Amino acid sequence: MKVGVELEYWVVDETGQLTPADELLDAHECVAPEFVDSLLEIQVPPVETTEDLRREIHCILTSVLGAANQQGKHLVPLGTPLTAHGLPIITERGHLLERLYGDELRYAKHCAGTHVHFDKGRVTEQLNLLTALDPALALVNSSPYYDGERVASSARASVYRLGAHSRFSRYRDLWVYVDDVAEWNARIKTEYKVLRAIAHETGIDEEAFAEYFHPENAVLTPVRLREQSPTVEWRAPDTALPSQLVQLVGDVAALLSQVEDKDLAIGDPGIWTDRIGIPAFARLQKLSASAIVDGLNSQEVRTYLTTMGFDLSQYQPLSEQIQADEMISIQEARKLRLEYADRLESDVAQLQEEPPESSTIAGEAEAVE
Image (cartoon, rainbow, N blue to C red; front, side, top):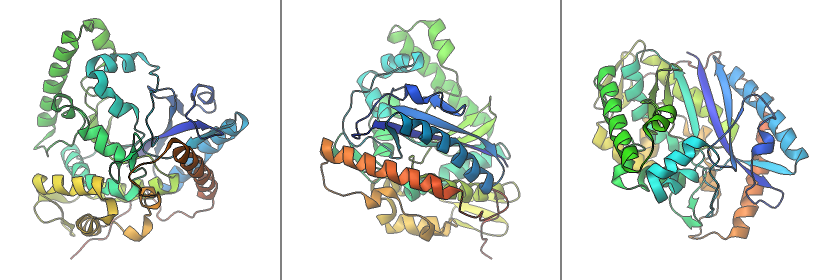
């Protein structure tokens, strides 16, 4: 199984204030712009081992950080910018999204996440297992603040999924399990048709809509099926320190690889020699809500993730290390951005020193007899 990763980071100046990322876009061929000007994306090419993933991230980010330092800029690995900002949109798709969503697009503009692309295998099982692993986002929650207020352990997931009106939350929130790929594709077709109707209502030209919106990118849900890649994409986690994300990607890939040979059963969660158990969707929704709001401070989330094979001692989410006051000032936010920009640089430097934990990125997780 090959895995590709996309990492989003905020760009700040030497005072910790958000600043345009445009001058960093040429720092490496794997750097891409996001739809707001202070956010950039690192597109890590597909790899087969955690060692390769660590090496690729180290190589790319070393180049980008070097260019940033020359320009007096820094990258920040936090799920939100902490305080309120009127970030300019810089892409045509972004402008169309703004017309579609209106003021509710602000919930997406202030979010930085991690997107993981897994090679397709038994796609139905992959879609359902990644859905069931949604609470694993708690392992890397990286910002409790949104618009200066303490919102949740993962403020990004909270506002991104639930901040929009119900008309749009269907495009961002977790979808129920599917029986087969045909059911998934039928859902996508329906939601694309609805979005096209909304675009028509808002006066968006049909040709422009068709150019920038396709069935597979019309939804921004935590799990997506990508036909062009072709991959199954997991979009649940915040952005975070690279070493944390390497650990998470390796652990999730190890689980995902097992559904090639094991049944996936809805019922009692757990990993056995012949099957993987996942909770009923109603139960999963409660676990995901706890993972977003309380993170690893939720005992039921900790129990569930341990049952699913995660070693919680390997994770120290940034949200749990950030002050928990109800409000954060602009000056405090700038100080925190610079603090975590420094931690990012240190983390990248250490990536090269860490030995691989397994020969493949999809090594076997422990099974219960």
